[in-house]
Image (cartoon, rainbow, N blue to C red; front, side):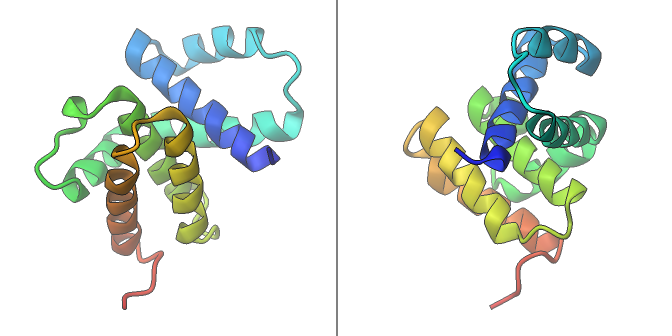
Length: 140
């Protein structure tokens, strides 16, 4: 597994922990990294960047997700799906130079590993729609 994929998976886990345990970003960081001393600085740095964007811009990210997830409120989505979406949108906002197709593809691979099979299409649709709004995907 590449360093970026590992970072994205760790960011998902951190966002999930913050969401489910109702912990502050600092609380998550303290417990999360204490159990992962073997993580390289490169992986940790990219993970922290996505997690920081995901928590620092949480209201904006959730608003974008709800706007593009027709008839779905963020709080009604499965916790895994909600946080995969949050991580993907956070990366789009934090790394505008990264092609949306790469971010979306990585989110879909992570969804295939951690979420239900039927969630992949939903996540793809929402992230694609968000990317179009952010003008990250060429209109066809």
